[in-house]
Image 1: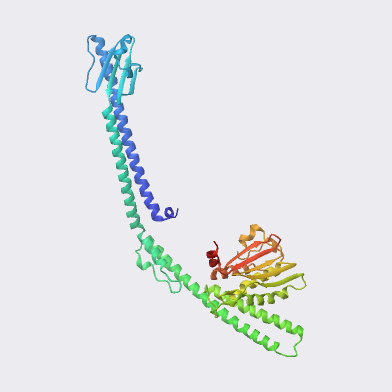
Image 2: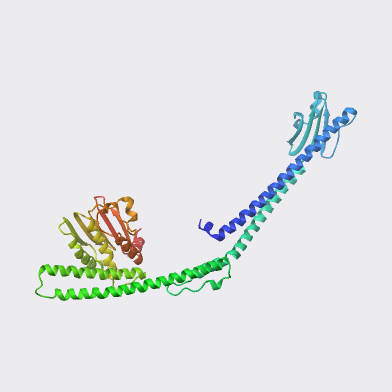
Length: 432
C-alpha cells in the first residue's frame, strides 16, 4: 500500500494501465473486425454461390455440381441425401459453422421440396491464421505494456526529479540552524513556487521558535530568582529557635511549595526546549528518595479524610534524569490520586524499573481512558473538582521526552492504578 501511495508509483501505474488498456482495446477491435468481416464475406459468398447454382440448375438440369479447391458442393434429392457427409446432412437451410475431423467449414444449405443443395467452404487455414494473429496481438500488447511501463518510469523520474530534490533538501535542514533558502535551487515553476512558500514558512517558524525559547529562558530565569529568595528566607525563619510549632508547619509548607514551583519551572523548561538532560548526577537519581519527598509534600492535602497516603519502596530504583522532571511526574500523579480519592488509601509502590500509584477512588470510565492525556480533558468522574486538565498532559509529554511509558487502568477491586515504566525497551527485550 505504501508503494501505491507514492506519487511516482501512481504515475508509473497510470502509464502502465493506460498503455495496456489501449493495446488490449486495439487488439480486441482488430480481432473482432477481422473475424466479423471474414465471416460476413464467406457467408455472403457461399449464399450467393448457392443461389446462383440453383438458378442455373433450374434453367439447365444437366448442370454438374460446382467444384473448387476449398469449396465442395452437393446436389441431391431428399430421398438420396446419403451422398452428403453426415456432418452436413441434417443441417437446416442457412449458413452454418461446422467442425469435423479436425477441420473447420462454413456450410451453406438450401433444402427445397424437390432437391437439396449443400455448399461447404474449408476455413481451417483461416482459423490457423486467426490463431497466429491472436498470438501476434498478445505479443504486441505485452510489448506495448512494457514500453508503457518503461516510459512511465522514465517520465515520472523526470517529472518528479524537482520534487524529490526538494524533499531531500528539506530532510537535510537542521532545526538548530537558520533554514537555508530552497527557492534558489529551483526554476520559477510550480516546484519553485512551493520552495518559495516553504522558505517563507520556515523563516517564520524559526523566528517563532527562537522567540519562544528566549521567552521561556527569560521566564525561567526570572522565576528562579524570587523562588530562591522565598526558599532562602524560609530557611532563615525556620532556623529561629523560638518558632512555634504552628508557624514552623506553615513555613515548611511554604518551603515545600517553593521547591515544587522550582521543580515545575525546571521541568517545563526542559519540556519546551525538548532537551533530554541526564542530570548532574551521572549515577542517576534515587526515585525512592524523590517519591518520599512527594508523599511528604502531599500529606497536608489529606486533611481530615479517612485516607492513608503510603510509600512502599519494594526495590531501589535509580533513573538518569533531572530530579525536577521525576518530581513533577510523580507529584502530578500522586496529587491527582489524593485529590480524587475520598477514603481508603493511596499507595506509591516502587518496584523493578517502575513506579505504581494505586488508589481507591472512583476510577475512570473505560471509554475515557484513551483521553486522559488530552489537554483540558476532564472526565465525568471528576465533575465538581478543581483542576485545569493540564497536569496529565504535561506528565505525558515529559515521559515521551525521556522515553518512559505511562498507562492508566482501573483496578478490579475499585480505584485506579497508574504505572510509570522508566525502562520499557529493556523490559521488552527481557520478556520471552
